[in-house]
Image (cartoon, rainbow, N blue to C red; front, side, top):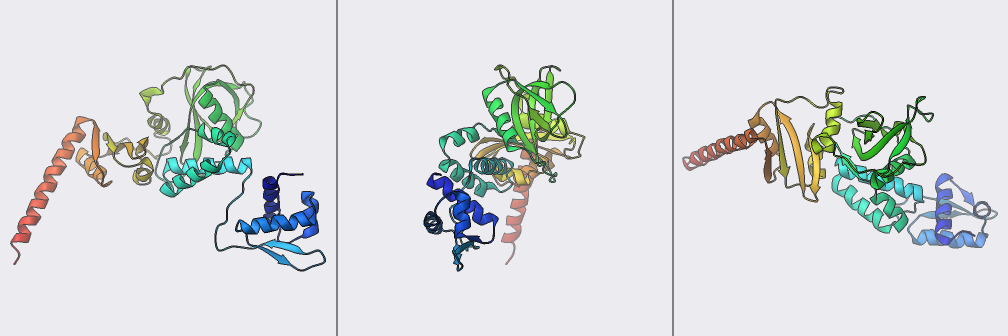
Amino acid sequence: MQKTSSRLLALLSLLQAHRDWSGDDLAERLDITPRTVRRDIDRLRELGYPILAFKGPSGGYRLDAGSQLPPLLFDDGQAVALALALQSAVTSGTIGEDAARALSTVRQVMPPRLRQRIDMVRVTAVPSPGSGDAAPVDTAVLMELSRVVHAREELRFDYGLDATGSTGRPRRVQPHHLVTRRGHWYLVAWDLDRADWRTFRVDRVHPRTPTGPRFSPREVPGGDVAAFVTGHFRGTDGSTADWPCIGEVVLDLPARAVAPFAQDAVVEELGPDRCRLTLGSWSWTGLAAALCRFDADVEVVGPPQLTSAFAELAARCANAAGASELNSTNVE
């Protein structure tokens, strides 16, 4: 006999998959008595699910559309997939604060074994203009990559366009980071056979078991994961221009609030209310003006030309404000 919670989930899944069910059919599918079916239907109604009863030889049930969202029931795979989707939305800034609150709620009600798996996922969002076609990724593969990145375990995998992988020998890497960019997931790893950094499409990765020994982490070239990944695609998809003036600042805003408006900039989260922004422009003054549009305190990291541009822009703004004030006093 199934536990009550899992039985309710199975009953709800049946009601969602079929328009009408007789009480006897539900009892047979769930291996329970018709009386237990009626009792479980009442429990789902108490949770807020609008289940209608209709007359017949043995009675029947139908899940109707409701005006309010009732408590949701998920199996393990659905819960993990939902949490990963929300985490990706939070880091990319696509739906911002609502996604962060939803992720917090889902994580809070997860059993410890699932919460631990979700907490192992570390995602770096690399914003870029346009939205590439999202590539479907096997949740099990994504979770395994998250685990080996977190555990610092060497990984062997086939790399190909389908489930057969490549025809050559498997790749051997030290996995360091999972990155999402323009609808695709990437694994940033140190390739042991090529003695160099490589970026792999996760939807083409087919892990092998067992995994290898633990390794000591390395730092990606330049020390910035987002910049490294962006540089990997520079000139291949037209999403990142070679601006003559590139500056770096820290904004007193959360990364998820900045990313949707950052165009081809790279946004790195530094905390709940601070982020690092690397942006380019055709002129230093133009770059300073573009950064002012975020309406937040700005700390210039570099270079000095950007600091000078802010000073020049401030002087121009002060002159404009002074002229406006003088003109207003001359109007009777």
